[in-house]
Amino acid sequence: MTTHKSADLDVSVVSRAAIEPSHQDRRGRGGRSAGRWAIWAGLAAGGVVMVFPVYWMLVTAFAPAGSLTNQRARLWPASLTWANLEQAAHDQPVGRWAVNSTIIAVASVALAVVVSLLAGYAFAKFRFRGRNLIFAAILLTIMVPIQVIMVPEFLVVAKLHLVGTLWAVILPRAAEGIAIFISRQFMLSIIDGAGELTIFRRIVLPMCGPLIGVLVILNFVWRWNDFIWPLVALQGQDKFTLPLGLASMQGTYRSPIEAIMAISVISMIPVMVIFAVFQRRFVQGIASTGFK
Image 1: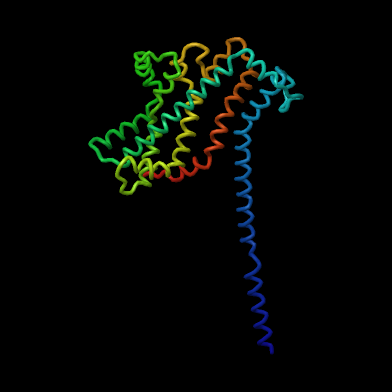
Image 2 (image 1 turned 30 degrees about the vertical axis):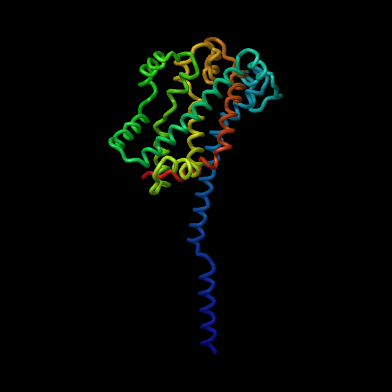
């Protein structure tokens, strides 16, 4: 009888020991929980730091003139107004700038997507002499900044009598080294014994939806925000894009900060729309573009 009681006692003690966590386990779990909270706090702080400039731009764009630049400035204005947008549209050819930016971005994206798809298909599918050397030269262009080739590029555009036209900005960006590289890597993952260009149109191209999403977003953002080359190639305020127009509004002695922020809000909308439309395909394209 005593033996059975001692055995039952031992079993109950072992069961409680197995079920109840030890002090070290509880301390370890508490440390991991504190670490997770610290990570989340750091991420939240980083998110606030990145979002605050956008918030300040929006608030400044719709706040009464001067209300956020005086000594009694607050994080939220006492009232909101559309006057800054109306004043900016009245004083500056914002509509013309937006049209120029749209034409350049859309035309450049269309050309870049077509050229990148065809070039990527050629480098992935066909075997020809000097293929690797040409592809290596294209990769080297990724590391060359625009400032290095600006003068010869301007001379070429000038000889073609394109200076001061939108084509001077569109045509030099028809082929991007990084876009061709991404296209080739994507094509390598889907080509298996393909033969002719008809297969490119009927088999390869329908499978390139994610790749096209990547190319559209990258090229649109590049061309929409481009500043250095349009500054050199475009002449006259009626040919300015939105980035050039915003820069021209910053004077030596006076800068209408509210109007600049209002136009900045307008220029941000197309990029957000393009990313929202192609976001899913962009993520798929980046995930499926391997390095082979």
